[in-house]
Image 1 (cartoon, rainbow, N blue to C red):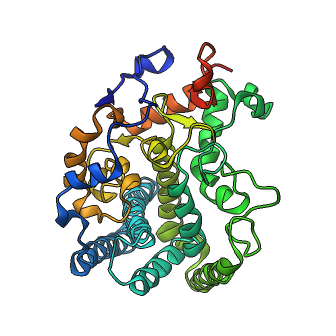
Image 2: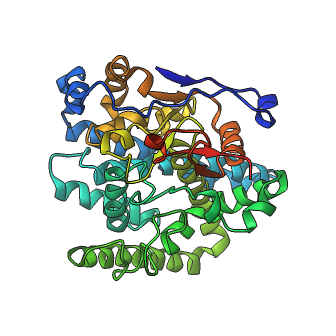
Length: 382
């Protein structure tokens, strides 16, 4: 199996050796991979799924109680130190809840779609995510992963299509500013104007029922998503009128920003790595695209994030496997995938900086045969 080992901070500004993922036709089929997975891994337990949801809600409630009860009583300036700690912890739990809704969108929470959509809609609306809008575009992302023409998110540009500002931002200060914007506003910029998404002939937005992202039969679902967001936003406004906007930010807004940052980090690092190829239409097929992702290690946060971080390769092959079976299933398929399996144990904060420097655009290799012109690799030298 191909594994990119962890790097030290000193490696971040030097060339490093990466073994590229194979781009040839895999010597196995999707059926071969599925046969290697124990059958019970495909079984969904509604009780078990609910247990993770209830556990996350309990932890979130405990954190809320502790924060609102004790932080205001701390002497100045301790609240300025403790509130960010609360934001980080609660933001991680929010991320876990977001991922449970993500599982609902993949039909991996329950055997009943109405149960999944009800839970996913409420959870995502409370986390200011348009559930059905995201579910639809995310489903197409899974159907077209790694395709430069048809993937829905984190579609890299070729060097010729990069904005001229990319040249001026290709330095430590520019990368820092770019990351700051991505981690604070990136999620909402993507939802609003489809930044880093698939290019469309006209304006595309997850909030617009008329957006080209969606078909005519899906537009009512987009409207429902918008209604959910407006309803919860109005509830936040009413609470702010009573408690104050500062209170709402301290209790909810700061944690939501942490969640949004992790959402960008996790999705970006799953699909951005020097070992991963992208394909144009001449080379792409579904299984090659599904294997063009990488498992990452977030330490103890792997469990908090319901292991989406370190079982993402499996997730792109069988998105309907519940997260509580994903580790076992990943262990089962790794011998089958061999060098087609990609993982990287570099700490995520180091990997984020490294990839922002070394994965600016994609290009075919300079000296390749005609048969491989449809295979694109990340490059980091402008």
